[in-house]
Image 1 (cartoon, rainbow, N blue to C red):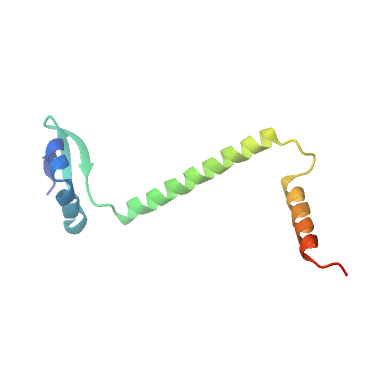
Image 2 (spheres, one colour):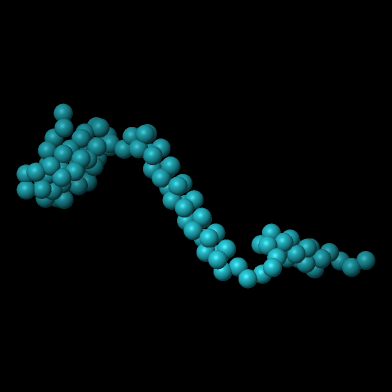
Length: 99
């Protein structure tokens, strides 16, 4: 059964309540001035999967934004790949003893 708990009581007993949620799978409806405001329930495997997916999507969005920013500011006639290959070749030559 889902218990109702006031936000003030939740604040005062947060550790114990979270422990009950985690260990006993308890669920709470958190109220503010007697009106439901939030639900506190165990974090499920589905929740974990959804969180992981959201984090992946956020990281990809950040990478896409960065790629657009780099593309807008790119000034070299060579591509990033060409420049990287040149840098690697120069590094390799500096490490290889001359014959």
